[in-house]
Length: 491
Image (cartoon, rainbow, N blue to C red; front, side):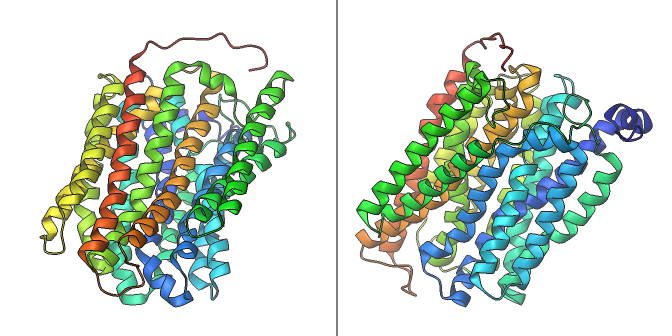
């Protein structure tokens, strides 16, 4: 281990400000990964036209990213223990940057999809890291503030990304949006070499010769996720038998995954997901909220740009202009709510956020083809205020009660569940939208919009509102006192 790059030595070198410099370093990389996950949605219509894609194939640009990101999140604790913070972080930034460059230069849809999968793998590995750092580098009285400032910076990426990306698509075409992550990746690499320690979580030395990764669990997780998403696609417009087989395979893979994780932990191994996490009631309830919230959040991230462009017939740059104020309000809300999370019950903040998010989806029904743009902007902003209450509060409420040895696993698991919900949400919104369009006798291939098309979009938004209301029920259960189970030696 380099004695000049341990957490203790870096803290001594940079003083009290070091923990904030460390947070900024990982924030920039996370901004790049989140930007890569959301900005491509603005370019989907142009990309679909360029490669002559149907709606189902086009949504795999988003879904493929989500699958890769979801599964790779389970590997973060193992990578950190084996290679340490710095090597793991630098490797993900290099992979993310390579995906952006390849995607922008690709001349076939298969290559674009491969680049998106590479970006997804990098994004999945990096996203649990900031929560681990916040819980370890900051005291309990500062964790909310740190989460708020981190969240404020991170949401600026999806807030500014679609606006800049919409203009770039209109001026230079869809390829330009892939290159936007490159400057952020380069800056993040420079800061990582200065401020990110080489140690593993807990301040111990990384162990390159440690236990091998749980390949069996990783394979089961990947197979289950792929079967689930393909089954959802086949559920509408495909073979009923094939959909049933795929969804059945997903259920079997999930059961096998859980059984294997429990067996591996009992044998003293290193499972991808330690099921002892769910003995902590706040974490278990927070996981349910994270899963449902991820479905609604990522489903709406896919649905909103498509709704504005193909439902309301707005240009890509108009879409970015409408979403920009909402994103800026989200950043300001997160900063304020982060401070509240140090003093107020996190279950209350999460519940307020979910209620506002559900309301914003329901109010989309008031928008018509003749509505002023400010109305659409207002409802989008209301939803982002709701997100601002949820984002800095949910992780804190779920992770604070955990035993210190479970923090890395907890951050990885809750991010995994949120992204699994997100991957389902993107597919689910596409399926529900196509189903309701067919029911109303319309199709997105039709160049003209109509009240019938808006009715189909409205029904998809109502589904998202119902999901948020369901998550609200679980959020109220976070009020229960945390039960502190005793860890066994296997845990």
